[in-house]
Image 1 (tube, rainbow, N blue to C red):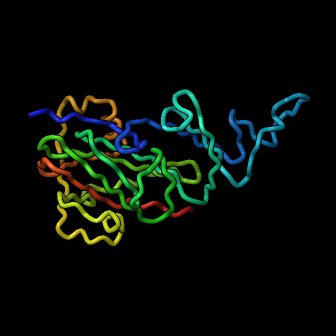
Image 2 (cartoon, helix red, strand yellow):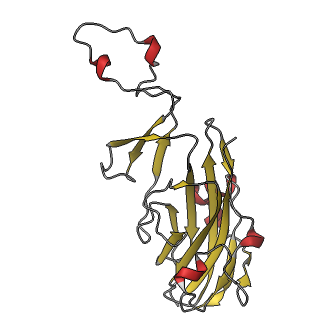
Image 3 (cartoon, rainbow, N blue to C red):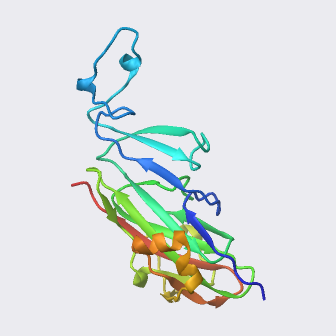
Amino acid sequence: MRRPTSRVVLVSLRTGRAAEGMGRYMPYGSPIGGAVGEERDLRLNSIDRYIKSSPNLVLEEHGHCEVPAGCGGVVLRWRNPSGPLPVKLAIWLNVDKFSVTIDGTPPSTSRPLLSPGPHVVVIEVHPETEVAVQLLFTATAELEDGNKQSVTPPPRDWLWSDVEPLQADASKVEFDATGWSSMVDSDLTPRQRKDYQISRLIEDGAIAMKTLPRSGPVWMRAVVHIPAPR
């Protein structure tokens, strides 16, 4: 029997493509470099006059490989701090083939913008051999004041099934999960615990969970609750 491989994803979730995203929260009205609009020392032939700022928006800088600019490039995004919040998702699975949806749609970045309220995360896994699927998951909301808050669902909220659900139904908060099983605690091997990404997930509050051994597709589901702006 082949040993299942493990994979860490800081979710740039285009059907299991691994990529780690980096984002930097910038204060209101701050351009790249940290200068505040009213503190600019404008000079003739200075490019400072082209710098844009806003008292109502936050300018975010996204780098590394999660953006179309590619490694070494950056993408800038203006965001309304009173609107949907960026939520950083991180997942570890001991299988390679999987896909993730939030409210029925695959996220295109590791930090999707989610509005306050409940959101349904569904993970579809396709083991190549019979294996108990192991999962570590964290979700961290970046609040409007720059602080971070864990919105990771507790293990008791994770359910799994080996019977394919209707995607439109499973992605609804009111989905009837009768017949789905609760995931159980999973022991990690010493080698797994030494893995940098796994140890980082554990430091962020992830708890290892697993299903019963299965050789076919498995679906896992939980609800993430995003806090309302203060």
